[in-house]
Image 1 (spheres, rainbow, N blue to C red):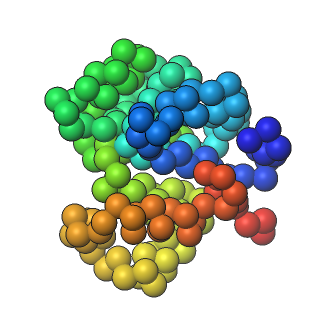
Image 2: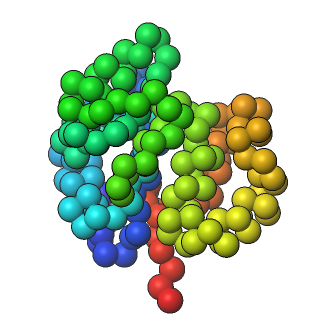
Length: 168
């Protein structure tokens, strides 16, 4: 992450992860904190899926902003996000300024399409959505396995969790 030139990227996408596999150590590392801060300071899009919103909360950039995170298990992670000062909204996907948060892995396609629309416009987003067979995205999301969601995001991600915007 030290070699990332922020100017080369239009957005940062952070998928969630599992505590037992070191997600929080990675997401709360000094390198991740600095990368998130730089993207936010330059008002670039930041999209998170599931518990990845906690990395933004830990960074302080969700303070006073509407956001969401993993909502199951009695909202344990949402309560944690609230402790960081976020205004927690129990909705699948929440956008607040340059930040998109979502509350479970199943929301991956919705987040990806929202980010794609922001980066490349509605026409390109719709073209991609159609080409991928997402005719009625929200009706299909419930049937998409987690692995397919991750594969979709990896198709859109250039570099490590970064979206590269083509230069015009």
